[in-house]
Every structure is written in C-alpha cells, then in structure tokens.
Image (cartoon, rainbow, N blue to C red):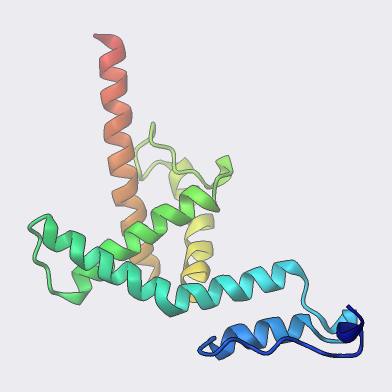
Length: 165
C-alpha cells in the first residue's frame, strides 16, 4: 500500500492492448481530479471492446449463422443489414427500455405515435452506432426498426387472435 502512495504502479501484462493501458493509466493519476469517473471508464471500455474484437466476432457469427441457415449471402451489404438489425435489437433491449422509446406493436409502423418515437429514437441509435464504428443512414435505421416492428406486430396480432378464439 505504501508503495502505491509513493507512485509505484503495476507493470502492464504483455500483449495488453495499448488502449486498455491508457484507460487504467488515467485511473492511476495522482490527482483524483485528473482521474476519469466510472461512467467515463465504462464508456471507454465499452467503446474499445466493441471496436476491437466484439465487432469482428459479431460479423463472424452473423456470417456463420447466415451460412448455417442456407443463406449464403456473401454480399457484405446483406450481412451488414443482418448485423445492424441484430445490434439494434440488443440496444433496444438493453438501453432503450423506457416506454418513450418503445415502438408500439399494437399500432401500424406508420402511426403517428410510432413516427414520433422514430423521430426521437433514430438519431440516438445513429449516435450509438457511431461509437462502435458504424454509420448507418436514417433510412437504414428506420428500415431495421420497421423490420423489428413487423416481427413484434405479427406476434401481437397472433396473440389477439388466439385470445379471441
């Protein structure tokens, strides 16, 4: 403990990415005001994880699953659409959980309520995607939301039909 107060720090483990070393080196600064808060650390770690192996791993998994399903789409655009939709689902499930961000499956996608939600949600999703090195257009994000809505709406309509029968 005394060594730490005298400025001694651990030696980085070999092959540790320099980005991670930079993050925890900032946390070791002598002056507490110069250290990042937990939110900043988490944000930087998340950004590094997603920009490093996580994005590549997701691309590989998407490509592998597409092949398994017989969809031999080697076309990067098609794989990017699949990956974008998958990542968007995760963002919607984990981050945008408040009702104000939830597309209404009981209403058509082009209902005024859903249009208002999309106007608020799509720019936020675009910003989130930029953090993980994606830059989808407004229309691309809207198309993914439309597809997600369609799946949810079909499930919703089937449940209503089952309740009536």
